[in-house]
Length: 114
Length: 117
Image 1: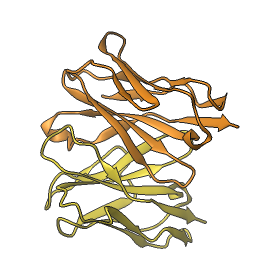
Image 2 (image 1 turned 180 degrees about the vertical axis):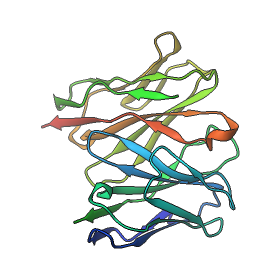
Image 3 (image 1 turned 180 degrees about the horizontal axis):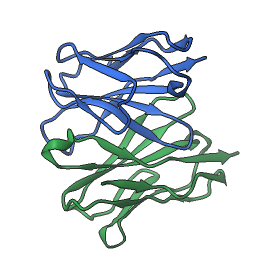
Image 4 (image 1 turned 90 degrees about the vertical axis):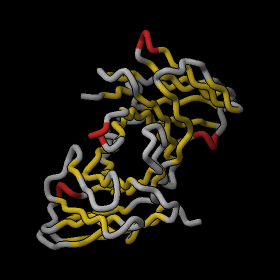
């Protein structure tokens, strides 16, 4: 099994450009998450989808939108990229509904906005 | 609101030394879950352990051990006889068992561990 996959691995955007980060999991997990990782700040939750058909804002949702396309796929869209969105983005999934299950992470997407 | 504090930003040790990574958490929920993740230089996040708030039993897995103390809201991680391959950033995380939380995790800022040969 591939687990959680993310595309692309690297991306450079100019300010104002848009792009979509793709995430897919093959573990039949119900919940999916998008985090960003910045130096000295740990991981911060952008958006999450507790189950197929639902999405909710996390800690830092401004400038992003998400789509839970189906149970496997959860995409993150930057409509108008800004330099402050330069970061490493991680997608994660969790089995659910039990609260205790850990999240499994994808390999990350390193995004630079110039 | 939940908060996780990893006061040690960076730790440097010599191989075979023991090292403890500290984690202090804050939550008003009585049921919660604590996690440790490892992020090696390759960048992926690797799950290490989960601990439930109602189980304070310490755990040992090979050279790794975890000490959970509710009285001090701490969940510390010890590596015994450290090795160069242990060099990584280690994250402590907190999850609460609330219906509306989506079981999202709150992460600490991470501790960069460097094990020198």
